[in-house]
Length: 251
Image (cartoon, rainbow, N blue to C red; front, side):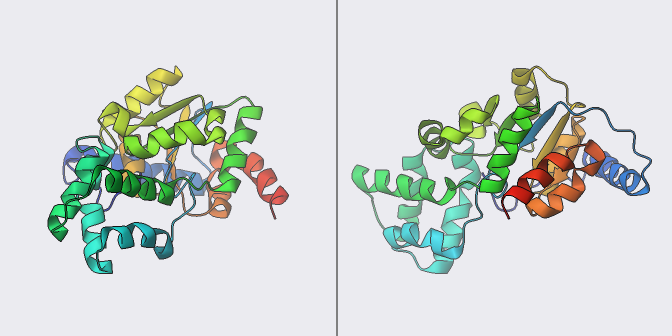
C-alpha cells in the first residue's frame, strides 16, 4: 500500500548509497546498451498505484465525510499511522479510533466496520492494463507476485473479492507478515515463496526508494509511472513486447 514519507532504513548510510549507485549504474548501462542483464523469469509487482488505479481526491471523500474531518486534518490523520496500519501494528479499529481520538470522537463497532470498508474501497479498483499484462506474462510462462505494504483489511478484501488476484503465483502483504518495504525481509520472504533468486526477478514499484531497497538484495527494478513509460523501461529485460501487445489491444 502506498504510504507517505517512506524511506529506506539507514538512507544516509553506506548501504543505501551503494544501492543507489547500483541502480544508477544499471540505468546508465542500459542507456549505453552495455548492460549484461540476467534472464528474467519472475516479475514482482507493487500494488498501490501500479496494479491498482490511482485514487483521486474524490475517492477519499466518503471516508473523510464519515470521519467528520476537514480536508487538511483528514490528510494528516489518514497518513500519520498508515505504516503501523499497513504493518499490522494497528488493526483497523485501532487505526480509526486513533483518528477519532484526535477529532474528539469515539466510534461504535458498526461505525468502525463502515470506516474500514470505505478505506478498502479506495484501493480495490484495479488498473486494467496492468492486470491484463500480468495474465499475458503468466501465459508466456513467467512467475508473478504482488509485494505490497498493505493492511490486513485491504489484503483480506482483495483475497475474498478480487478474482484477478488468482493470476499471481504469490501474494506478499506487509499486514500478514508484519514487515514491509524497505525491509529486506519482505523481499526475501517473497523470493523464498516463489522459489526464485533475486537476480532472475524484476521488481516494479512506483517509489524509487523501494526500487533501491530491491537493488540492495540483488533484485533489478523499474520505477513505474505509466504503462506506456513502463514499456520503454522493460526493453533491456526482454519484456517490452508482451506489454506492447496488451497496450495495442486496449487502445
